[in-house]
Length: 175
Length: 175
Picture 1 (cartoon, rainbow over the protein chains, first blue to last red):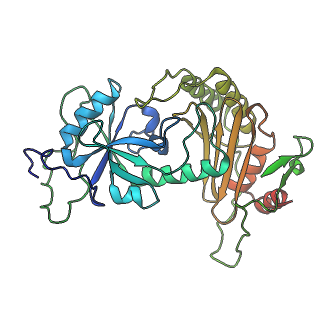
Picture 2: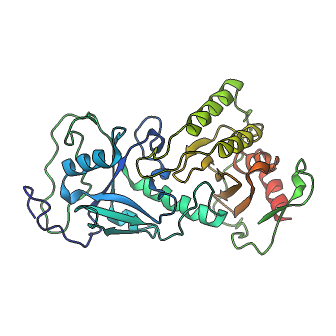
Picture 3: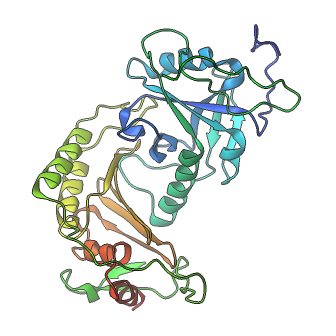
């Protein structure tokens, strides 16, 4: 895989060290200071057991542009989390390129939640615990220029993959 | 699970089934517990309470797909249930973190060194648990229009205890 064409050879398998990206649309999914992502950002939509994420291997610009495309105008930033941190508490992260290349699903392996009704207490506790662990491990990047194409924030990638050169150091001043 | 057996104004009206799977005895031999502190007034000011209800009102006005991933808007009755519960709980608890959920429910969360509590309000049901840092997880659920009046007092005693209050509350739950 090259930096010029990250999609050319995207493996289906997601390595533990790979960075997974969740686009954040609503301010309700971040704390008031917009520095941390809230656990509710990792809750699946009603009737679903999975939530949509992107693979950073496709590039930061891809994640930003796709996030905007998916989320619409209220997009506010991106949250990055290592695949290993998704798997640690028991969730799955799997490639789901049926929708688009670079798309993946996080599956909490918990029953789907009903519309308008809370899950029973035992399921609520499991879901709360799972989402809290993911939120604690995720790094939220507020987009400094959400209406402009391409990513202008700090690098999303959290770690290098085995056998890969480390990502270049970001010399841009912090936003 | 808890069962409401008598007057909702009495703390002894909550009973806890001994067979509940989430109940585990407290190990008093391990690390020293957090020290209960003299408790200042937990109840928020009138202005804070007003601001909380206003935030709740804002959440209630969210349109469908407010999170960009197919979230459900908040039903008027869910909002009404949440306002009613919040009014009651704030008689004895500090302001919770108030979060809308993708399935159209509203979560209230309290956190302290003694544990955390999560109450999720829905259209017809509520779901609740309090997870103690050094003790059991206590689940509770029921009709959304009748969150027990004593819930706030019991959670306050467990998460924001003055000396002796936590033991009393746990004993009450265990009965």
